[in-house]
Image (cartoon, rainbow, N blue to C red; front, top):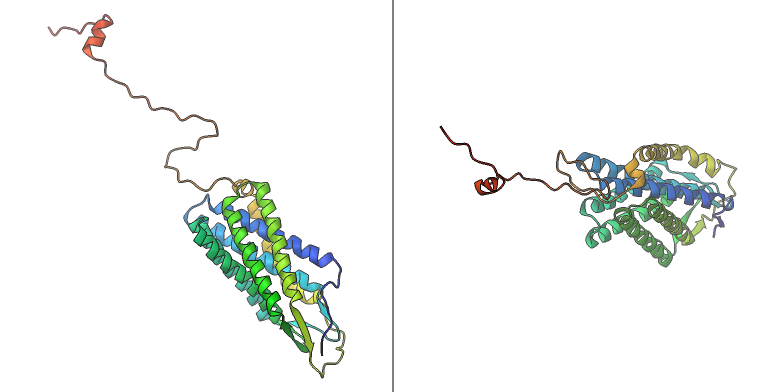
Length: 289
């Protein structure tokens, strides 16, 4: 029996809130990745890890905010918590692989293609693993072409975002890149939802009123939401993470960086004057008595 699906139970509230959360995670992740270009060793790895966790948490939170507005008529839904949090781990780990590749290899073609593919597959895997964690009296079916299209959107969006993270250093351009990533991630989500078909079991009866999606999902989003808040505080209190700038350049110890427009001092070497020059200026070499 075909189930009737409503993906916008709260109108535009959940899509807009989900989009804003995706933009927040992308903005924090891109700023952390840009900041890592000016760091070395342990701080560099720390910034990249913070960026990967921010993007992964933002995408995961975006997905489940959108799912608050998802409902199926004639049945009640619940969520398998281990699978739900496993989708969060998949998102963070696979996004981390892509970010670390680009963070250490730079904006080379191979690093961007490999990192973007892994990151995009991580976003798509998070989405479909999260959907697999839903429990109701029926099963899902997907349109193959639409699913493939959603994966392509995720890979292209991830590749473009990684390129922006290492190539765009200004605050406003980076903010624009995070908005583009938010649009792409939201587009991937709703493209994947358009591929969804729900088949209820023949014996399924209208379920008794159960817990609402809001009461089921909001408690699970408290942890990732608090993490994004903490990541935002860290980024705001680091000026280089906010303003960005060119990639890190190794500086020799003891040499302070020059401000823009400052001319480097030319080293001056004293030269010992010759006897002829001194004589021409009226100087005489003292005689030895």
